[in-house]
Length: 185
Image (cartoon, rainbow, N blue to C red; front, side, top):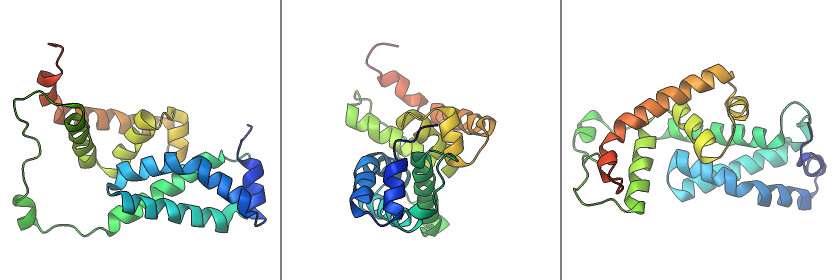
């Protein structure tokens, strides 16, 4: 398996700042997208990705080519950073949760693209962490099932189970949108 990052990772492991900068430039957009979708606020996502690259700098010398693609390792570290941050978030007391606005109700007006995107993001945010990660990797980051399973440290069958449960939950939560598709279907 040829890894296009192998040479730069080896150089970064020897302290080459230029190689590290190339890796950061090459992978930041994808990792930031995953972190934003997992965490929400851009600043928190940027902080998480920055932590990932700090780990890259300190662990690059120990990375073993051939075990997994370097990009797969970066995705895994990014997901772990997101999981850690999500677990550290304070949870709202039950009384506060009861006072939250109903985000599921939509006006009868036709949805615009921005509103549709926000509705999908809200639905994704209700999924359990692992289902959300599986959906994001496969449907938003264009990872195949094998690669996504490797990133998440799962068997392909376990990933497919997460995808199926996540898709069912999303279909259920977004069922009210079918009336707003604009094509009469």
